[in-house]
Amino acid sequence: TSRRKVVPWPTEWVSSMHDALPPQYRIAVTLGSGLGLRQGEVFGLAVEDVDFLRGVVEVRRQVKVFGGNRLVFGLPKGDKTRTVPLPESVATELSNHLATYPRRSITLPWGTPHADKKSSAGLILTTRERSALNRNYFNTRLWKPGQAHVGIEQSRDNGMHALRHWYASVLLDAGESIRAVSEYLGHSDPGFTLRTYTHLMPSSTERTRAAVDAAFAAGRHAGKETDTELEQPSRG
Image (tube, rainbow, N blue to C red; front, top):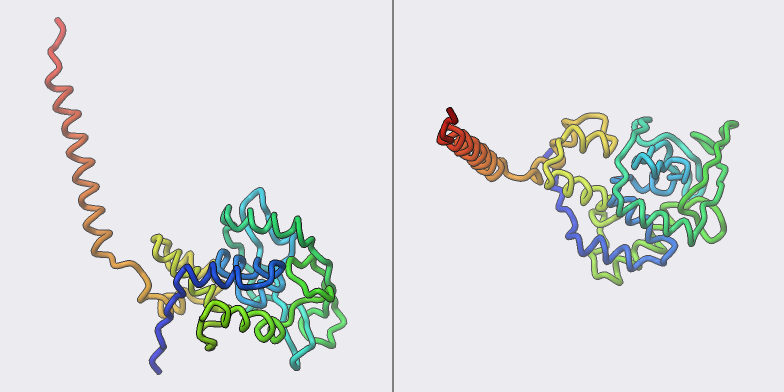
């Protein structure tokens, strides 16, 4: 089957969706687009997962929904935890968010709604009723009105997952390797990442021209310095 090509959002859409959400939920857009988190991982991110000093975030859990309204904590997709870089811009906004909307400790069953094991986390995003966010509520009551406000078509392609695609496109455009992008997105196979995003990788022709030009320029510069040294009159 032919895979539909991912078309990343324009950056203006990301910032417009951020501003279209109620203030206490805007950080969700920043965590999705700035860390490449899945929606459930955004809702499951806790303050204790963020290392501001080292500049990294540990992605350890997601919020999962059973039967429409029963929430549990679980491992990220593929049962894989991962570490992602924390950009300074994301850290600054997150600090400001937490100063206004302090974390709330939420306890949920781990794995399934009937699990004996419970887990607690100081969640960054919660509802006004002090519970974890349910994706059905978030998508219907917050995301869709935001899309309507910005003028983004309400399609599956324009769900919160679009923020992950934007993140991947930014990294690839900056020359980051497929292996690193795959690791940060939490894909089990870099081949999947490559198949999904290969059309977004910058053309190598321009990089090749620039690399050769830079090497020649450096060589000529070194050559001139050697010539100058040779021209120095000997003292004797």
